[in-house]
Length: 231
Image (cartoon, rainbow, N blue to C red):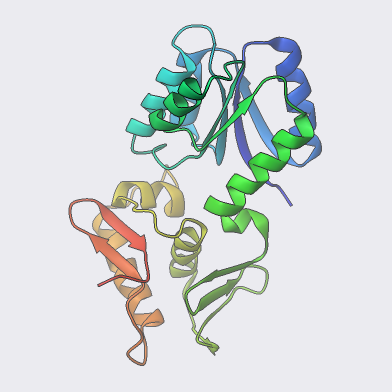
């Protein structure tokens, strides 16, 4: 089972090759660049599941890459682990305040880094850690394509299933209609944004049968999120 798409931004060729070898051995799909501008292009074209980002790289700095990744709607929720030789507490705090999710100081063990990446992905992408997705009293078996709420099977169409799976993979995160179109329908589909609203409505009707609490929240002017405080 593929563990996810990883973008490695590291301009030391020897270290990049070593990390690429370790992550590909663990079934990650690795894209690599040592250039900050190219990293932003790669992340925008195909948003990865996680970014390993060196602080000191060619072109724009790792901190600036982190800042821009966080600003861009298509990558705002992608987890980032910064790699750096800077061990001072002030630098670590600066990296985290810029938007990094974790911070690894060189030298480090590649095996430890793989474990850190897995830990972050388990936290933000539960689908990458197993075949059963759960949120509140809702659960989805990816293999058998079955969805249950409070133990009761819920029939879903294929589009609603993909939509719910996307929400279950990113609980609590807000997604715009455009981002949902990209992720669920695919970038090349000629589909209007209001189509998302139609399928959200169908999904809500299916999972809220029997007066169950709302789990899909509408965030005004932003989009939708899977949230047990939904209204």
